[in-house]
Length: 251
Image (cartoon, rainbow, N blue to C red; front, side, top):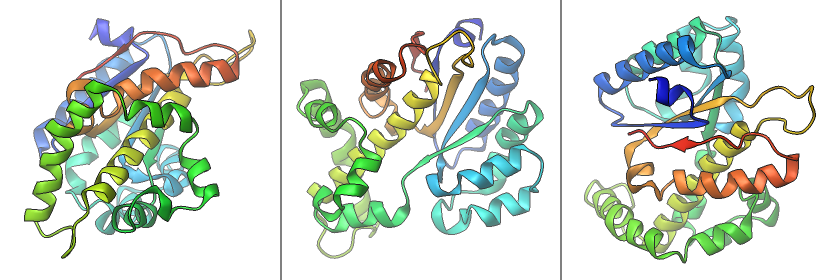
């Protein structure tokens, strides 16, 4: 835990249905709150970006657990057992740790997945979710990432077909594009938070970001963590420094 507390980004890769995983997440937050010299932020795959004001209100104590469930449209947009996540949410509220929404809106993801790829999005939408388009495109060509697609994304695609989640004419191109965009979006959210406001002696110190997300996004490092490493440099160049601490994967 002391080693984790010295990190700038920590990944807690979960099995969504595992109550034990969520219990451990809450314990990690409690331990980090006692040890970390930096402020903490917990970034969530479970909540879509437009619902950030709901998370803010919950941490501020203005919403109950039931209102958090309702106002994030949890049942429709995430669906995994809400009660399992309550120890994590309670730990964050107990320590006044901000919660950060990472997921793209479901409609946008569906259009990419079933509409043939990124071409389904407008230029403005792409600009909003891909802050570093050149780096994003180059990343897709790296051999370790192509191996990650083979080992992780392809089996996930097959599982979605077997589960009947992709309709009658599943497209791997659309599925991969949605997965890649989802990972890039989460990575950009994490990196921007980890860099903080940057520059200037009066600027707030960047937080330690604890990313809570599905384990396949963390496995082998090539879903989200390596993207974060790339994007940290991209954001640091634009805010004049800050957030340059070590990053560590924990799943």
